[in-house]
Image (cartoon, rainbow, N blue to C red; front, side, top):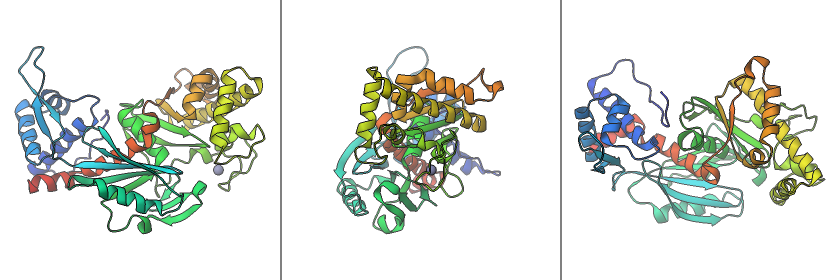
Length: 397
Ligand SMILES: [Zn+2]
């Protein structure tokens, strides 16, 4: 199934009660994933069910405070219908974007509308989690259902954090997200930015897609029918640590020749003799991009090399994974703006000849800076709309 939501797999043998829950979940997902509010009649069409069935399902979801109906604007032909909107007393997801020295907390309702709640700075130690827990406590009500949490670095088995620029190695989430936390799901920020593009941005409706976030280096995710792929230990997507561009340098990950050595802010600043790393590196990379845009030859050569390495790697990955579209965020947006033709030419050169007539579309992401927060809300809502959870709520109504 295409579209901005996924279809929970249908059990092999299904009772009429199961079928009812299955359709309730599909209906909720249709409302949650839609680009604009849907009417009850549109939802019935999307699900391939009759108007009377849709009315009955919506009635039950209203009873369970999962969905609310309001009169739709009269207009056009056909019988009057209703708009399906979040229930004013319905569940909420909280989303957290945990960055290198700041964090953001937002509340997100069914359909994806977000309200910023609080922001803070942190001291780059795990103590930050206590401050975030306190902020959640200040804003939580009994409507809070699940917290989605975005952080950088791989999260092995969904619980062990490796955030190299904070010096966190194998920090156990169980020690940070204690028993007093609401139900919380944590995932990698680049992966969540990709999920946000697939659900609500440039990759909406694309069956097979990839997203890359370019900052100091490059991280990303493969997206299949609106879902990010996580791998056997939840650490898939380290595309930046593949030897795609022939570099001979040693990477801090322990591998020689990683793609990340040639793409991103670290690669840009290294050409100017600056030490790759955090701190001033991001500002210096921005300065190099600005000088390249103004025609400075040395800066232009550095940006050309970055764009060429980006394109080359995308071509190699397209040979393996056959994405229809690839979106970029962070510095990737600047590279598309300044050097689209360089990226595309090197992508084409890296594609097997038979693929070159139909290369993947390379696009700037549209969710932007809000990507990790938006993706964090999506994993929380995936949990809220899981069939067992919806069933419990309907039975408790
Ligand atoms: Zn590496």
